Length: 192
Image: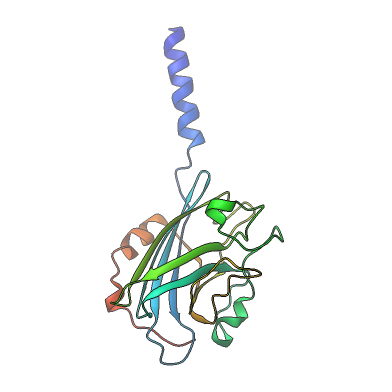
């Protein structure tokens, strides 16, 4: 009987300790200038110890492009309204997954590499970052795709202009599952 109580207690702890609803975010990347064909999508899954980010872009030049979360949720003025890299710790630029929040901007995700077909993907984990509820959280902020490679130089990686921008929005699990099947080739890019 004692063993049964222990097992039941552990089961109850697991049930209540694991959230039944995981926060899911999504950003739709559009070109920052009128008639730009740049487009993409970002899905963000909040895990217990950080964010899993999956990004896809299309219609960009071949090569590496800096990819960052910026401090404001505004894609206006060719992406400049998004402000600087999300950097609540006020530290130097770096590669957050490797360097950590105390040695890199929280929004520093490095580069997304596009092939000759103009498409690129990035899968990255940001430890200690949250989508909602805890600091630092990224919901409502902008994701920026830059024209050039982030070389990790100071102060912001020398990645050049902002060619794509999307705002991180919260979705429920059902909506995110339905949107996960979206095909980039069927999306229309708009300037802005």
